[in-house]
Length: 125
Image 1 (cartoon, rainbow, N blue to C red):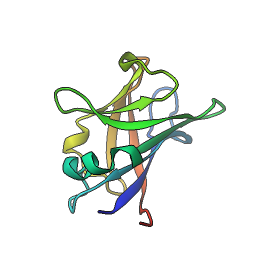
Image 2: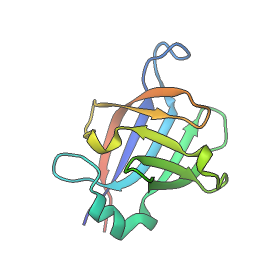
Image 3: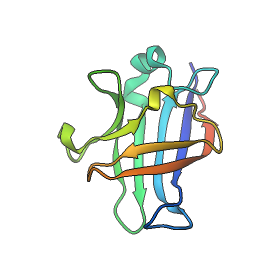
Image 4: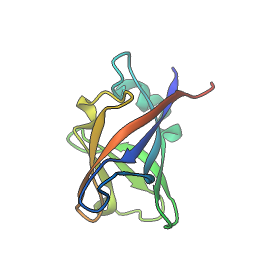
Protein backbone atom coordinates (compact mmCIF):
# COMPACT_ATOMS: atom_id res chain seq x y z
CA UNK A 1 0.00 0.00 0.00
CA UNK A 2 1.18 3.49 -0.84
CA UNK A 3 -0.13 6.51 0.99
CA UNK A 4 -0.43 9.85 -0.74
CA UNK A 5 -0.21 13.36 0.68
CA UNK A 6 -2.88 15.52 -0.89
CA UNK A 7 -2.81 19.32 -0.70
CA UNK A 8 -6.03 21.28 -1.17
CA UNK A 9 -5.99 25.07 -1.50
CA UNK A 10 -8.97 27.38 -1.31
CA UNK A 11 -10.57 28.06 -4.69
CA UNK A 12 -12.15 31.39 -5.58
CA UNK A 13 -15.09 32.39 -3.42
CA UNK A 14 -16.73 35.58 -2.13
CA UNK A 15 -14.22 35.93 0.74
CA UNK A 16 -11.18 35.18 -1.47
CA UNK A 17 -11.93 36.23 -5.08
CA UNK A 18 -8.51 35.04 -6.25
CA UNK A 19 -8.51 31.90 -4.10
CA UNK A 20 -5.75 31.41 -1.54
CA UNK A 21 -2.72 29.18 -1.16
CA UNK A 22 -2.57 30.16 2.53
CA UNK A 23 -5.92 28.50 3.28
CA UNK A 24 -6.50 24.80 2.90
CA UNK A 25 -5.74 21.26 3.95
CA UNK A 26 -3.00 18.70 3.63
CA UNK A 27 -4.01 15.14 4.34
CA UNK A 28 -2.72 11.63 3.93
CA UNK A 29 -4.83 8.87 2.40
CA UNK A 30 -4.49 5.73 0.30
CA UNK A 31 -5.76 6.38 -3.23
CA UNK A 32 -6.74 3.76 -5.78
CA UNK A 33 -5.72 3.79 -9.45
CA UNK A 34 -8.51 6.29 -10.23
CA UNK A 35 -7.34 8.68 -7.50
CA UNK A 36 -10.23 7.91 -5.14
CA UNK A 37 -9.84 7.16 -1.44
CA UNK A 38 -9.43 3.40 -1.03
CA UNK A 39 -11.61 2.39 1.93
CA UNK A 40 -10.10 -1.07 2.43
CA UNK A 41 -6.55 0.32 2.48
CA UNK A 42 -7.66 3.18 4.76
CA UNK A 43 -8.92 0.61 7.30
CA UNK A 44 -5.40 -0.84 7.51
CA UNK A 45 -3.68 2.54 7.80
CA UNK A 46 -6.24 4.80 9.49
CA UNK A 47 -3.78 5.87 12.20
CA UNK A 48 -1.47 7.22 9.46
CA UNK A 49 -4.25 9.11 7.66
CA UNK A 50 -3.70 12.53 9.20
CA UNK A 51 -4.92 16.00 8.25
CA UNK A 52 -3.55 19.48 8.79
CA UNK A 53 -5.86 22.44 8.30
CA UNK A 54 -3.94 25.65 7.62
CA UNK A 55 -5.87 28.90 7.61
CA UNK A 56 -3.86 32.09 7.19
CA UNK A 57 -2.54 33.39 10.50
CA UNK A 58 -4.58 30.94 12.60
CA UNK A 59 -2.89 28.04 14.36
CA UNK A 60 -2.94 24.82 12.33
CA UNK A 61 -5.50 22.21 13.33
CA UNK A 62 -4.29 18.60 13.34
CA UNK A 63 -6.51 15.55 13.12
CA UNK A 64 -7.44 12.40 11.23
CA UNK A 65 -9.29 11.38 8.10
CA UNK A 66 -12.29 9.40 9.38
CA UNK A 67 -15.17 7.46 7.89
CA UNK A 68 -18.53 8.49 9.34
CA UNK A 69 -21.71 6.48 9.71
CA UNK A 70 -23.34 6.33 6.31
CA UNK A 71 -19.99 6.22 4.51
CA UNK A 72 -19.01 9.88 4.22
CA UNK A 73 -15.43 11.03 4.80
CA UNK A 74 -14.55 13.76 7.29
CA UNK A 75 -11.67 15.46 9.04
CA UNK A 76 -11.81 14.97 12.81
CA UNK A 77 -9.55 17.26 14.81
CA UNK A 78 -7.75 16.10 17.92
CA UNK A 79 -8.35 19.34 19.82
CA UNK A 80 -12.14 19.32 19.39
CA UNK A 81 -13.03 15.70 20.07
CA UNK A 82 -16.68 16.42 19.22
CA UNK A 83 -18.14 14.96 16.02
CA UNK A 84 -20.14 18.17 15.58
CA UNK A 85 -16.83 19.93 14.85
CA UNK A 86 -15.83 17.45 12.12
CA UNK A 87 -15.44 18.85 8.63
CA UNK A 88 -17.14 16.66 6.05
CA UNK A 89 -15.90 16.21 2.50
CA UNK A 90 -18.77 16.61 0.08
CA UNK A 91 -18.94 13.32 -1.84
CA UNK A 92 -15.25 12.62 -1.13
CA UNK A 93 -15.86 8.95 -1.92
CA UNK A 94 -16.82 9.88 -5.49
CA UNK A 95 -14.05 12.39 -6.19
CA UNK A 96 -10.72 11.67 -7.80
CA UNK A 97 -7.93 13.49 -6.00
CA UNK A 98 -5.96 14.48 -9.08
CA UNK A 99 -4.19 17.74 -9.88
CA UNK A 100 -6.57 20.51 -10.87
CA UNK A 101 -9.72 18.78 -9.62
CA UNK A 102 -12.10 20.58 -7.25
CA UNK A 103 -13.63 19.23 -4.04
CA UNK A 104 -15.91 20.79 -1.44
CA UNK A 105 -15.71 20.62 2.33
CA UNK A 106 -18.44 21.50 4.82
CA UNK A 107 -16.41 23.22 7.51
CA UNK A 108 -17.25 23.12 11.21
CA UNK A 109 -18.93 26.55 10.93
CA UNK A 110 -21.35 24.98 8.38
CA UNK A 111 -19.77 26.93 5.53
CA UNK A 112 -19.35 24.89 2.34
CA UNK A 113 -16.11 25.89 0.59
CA UNK A 114 -14.49 24.65 -2.60
CA UNK A 115 -10.83 23.66 -2.78
CA UNK A 116 -8.53 22.75 -5.65
CA UNK A 117 -6.18 19.78 -5.58
CA UNK A 118 -2.74 21.34 -6.09
CA UNK A 119 -0.47 18.45 -5.14
CA UNK A 120 -0.60 14.67 -4.78
CA UNK A 121 2.65 13.03 -3.67
CA UNK A 122 3.47 9.43 -2.80
CA UNK A 123 4.82 9.11 0.72
CA UNK A 124 7.91 7.00 1.29
CA UNK A 125 7.12 3.62 2.80
